[in-house]
Length: 103
Image (tube, rainbow, N blue to C red; front, side, top):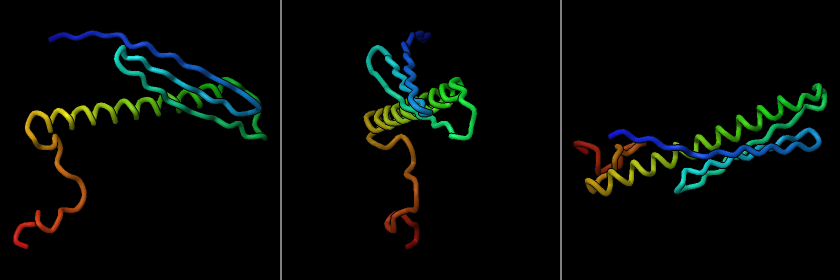
């Protein structure tokens, strides 16, 4: 079944005394996510505001991307549990003693 959609995103940049902060807001129509990022200018570096903007914006988008992946993973796990009564993924980490064979 084909699916199309459009999500709105706003990116806000704030610069003050060598620190650039970015906030990116994604509105999916049903949920809103907000990512944050910061960049600090090294005092010995030449002042190039575009570099701070790029770093802060990239970090904010990275934060937003992590949140989207986390939300998708929670949704996947919720579907697996609801549909089958079991987790959608195998457990991670060391097995519990009662899960070990022969022992």
